[in-house]
Image (tube, rainbow over all chains, first blue to last red; front, side):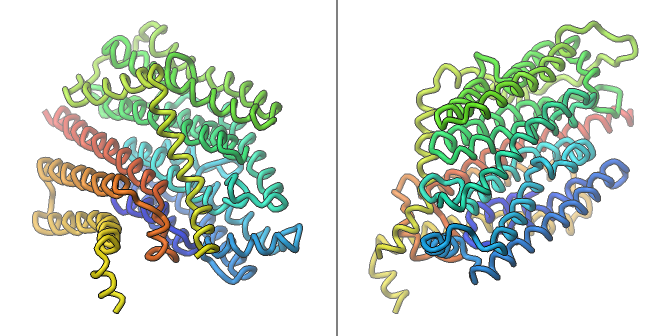
Length: 398
Length: 130
């Protein structure tokens, strides 16, 4: 787990395509092993093997893409690649074909690692098969580092300060298509799920689609909204997974897996089911919870940038995604006991109660104290967007 | 000569050292992994108390890293200076430092959950045994 986190630290600081590849591999290999941690569980082994095979294929595509970029430009250093692309854009309106292929393969590799459509097939199986704590790890941490590195590699298309207009159009089209497909698959796929981890997997696909949609606006407001949405999504996810991890049945080896089993939660620990409901409502984007502002900012950035159709589709699917969260809330609070259910759950310790209460208070209070948070994210967005611009500026002027 | 210049200019040296410490904080985790392997080799099986202690050490490690990063950010960490040192393979901009802090905070949450995960695994095994 520590090696995986170390890989993430290396990845977000990397400035070279080969270092990026090595860091992604360091992170992925740790994740493959962690997924099949339960050696005696067939499901866990199957998930690990699936993840390994799909992941190796994606790494191969990424490496092939890197080699094509190196073959076209003669460097793997991202700063030098930006400078070369700028000089290239002065004379040529189109990118060389090998470079386009290279970047498309890099996109495929990174989208696979993120679990974005059409490279999402592994997500539900791996989430379901991995031990809960590893699913938590998989769902939260790798996405931060890979999204950031994706933004850095495709700065010429996504970063409003570095954008090269004639080169960015094709890539933005790809990103928007993938985002819409992810939202569609995530929303429709989750409706039919009966297991909580599979539902969270499809929810992750849909939420990443929303984030990519925000990034694809190629503006300050879009990046700001995507960052804010991502932060809120992770906060709700931490709360949800923590509850999933601590909710166990006494006298049974089984943990809560199916949605119907959540009926037991409200009958044995009402406060816990209430906190779980908060996380779900935040996911659904219902006020007065922080998730509402995340979605609001994404749609706002789309409207500001004149992408009304995308905003409309986003709102439509946002309503659809709230259906499966509300369905889970129905199981949590509004369903009567079923006879064959076991209703005795393990009681919470003081530490767990404190940690959960803090997360819930954070979730609600941030809605009412938006000012400082928005200001902070404004600064962070500025810093992230400007990092490369400043660096290239320095190279040209010193 | 370059090293001499570095020592002559104290501000420069301070920035150089803080960035080095920041990188070495990453390698602190590698040190913990070695420690875990050594503990495992010594006692063959880790008892739950040793495991908990190890997780607490890791959480403290992340907190130390957050402090170092925060110190870097508050002392006016600037990419223009860092360009001299990390201009090729790595980039440490203030935005990246914020992301490091963010990952550290989430990792702490993860390890707190890990503590509970093993607490329950232990608890349930106990229930089954008796």
